[in-house]
Amino acid sequence: MLYYILFLILNLITNLTMKALTVALFFFISQFAFAQNAGDIELFWKNGKQFFDKQKLALGTTIAVTSNGNVLGKDRYSADGGKTWKEMTGKPEGAFYYTIDENNGDVLACEGPHEPKLPSFQWRSKDQGASWAREEVTVYKDKNGWLSSRSASETGITLKYGEHKGRLLTASRVFVGYDNRNNYDYHYSNALYSDDEGKTWNPSSPFPFVGTGESALVELSNGVIYYNSRCHTRIGNRQIAYSYDGGKTWRDFRICDYLPDGPPAFYGCKGGLVRLPVEGQDILIFSMNDVPENKDTSRHSSKGRINLTVWASFDGGRTWPVKRLVHKEGGYSSLAAGVKGTPSEGMIYLTCIDGSFSRFNLAWVMNGRSWKEFIKP
Image (tube, rainbow, N blue to C red; front, side):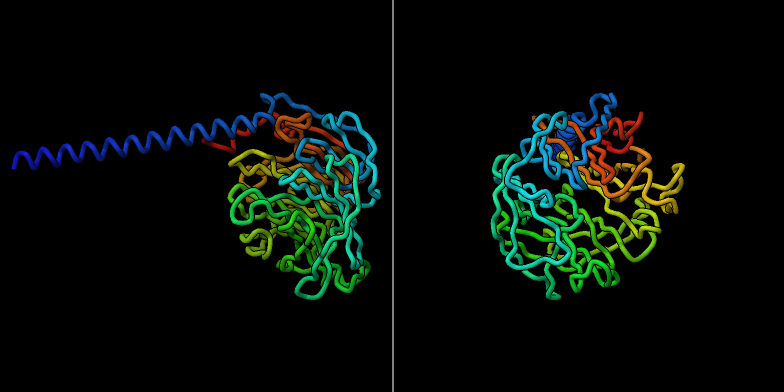
């Protein structure tokens, strides 16, 4: 009996020791992962030292960063992080809706016609945006029989996680009746995806709310796609939905409590959206016109598209606790983030239809607050 009791005691001690070791190991691994991620955040944080630079460059309403850190405007590219610019060759100025292929380093560009036609064409760059060559591609109609347009959509991405890793995915829209002047009650956002390096493009199901268009999407660290869309037919905030199958279908529609969709006199506006490349974290930056005098963002200005502002989310777009005014003008805008180990490292890029081009870091967005308020180990 004594031996049996001793056996139970030893067994209990062993189990407790293993549990303690497991907890300690898990804590160590989590702290190590957090330290690694914090290092990537620090690239955009720069020890809290704020950086902001603004130029008048008229780069268009789309900005992108290639896999080697080149910054792309509609007709120019920068190989030094946005300090100096060179002209692109081989691509029309209107083909500035980009998709970054991180599988092979190529960059794809297309135009955004209100009436897409077949055959379809795009331009491909194999030198990070410096030169381009036109190619014919296959684009399928959606389930309603319409071709999708990239008009006023943000830059397309390469999926990094899950079953559809490597897929190219970009926001797009459908002009029902191919009519940009009417039928806005029936237009809708959607997405285009390619599993063969951009040779073939398939349309997703329609966005869950009609009257939408001019949208953006990012992949979160768990592989879920976060979709953020303008609405052309109602006054209010941005329209949000999610995809759990690599961008084929959209679910969990909601109206964002935080992000405005432009003033009602203009029934919404194109906004910019980017996820900072920080592994394991979902830090999103969004750009849009804001209300005057920093009022509640659920209200809108009657003065037109003014007060271009950026917001920051640290939980994949559920909340947006930080915002900062960029300048008092406004309009269509676009965002991109720099790439680690390149001249663009640590930079957030913003271009606006008013011709402005801004570079800044996360510390500038936070304006004295720390990211550690919102991200805990």
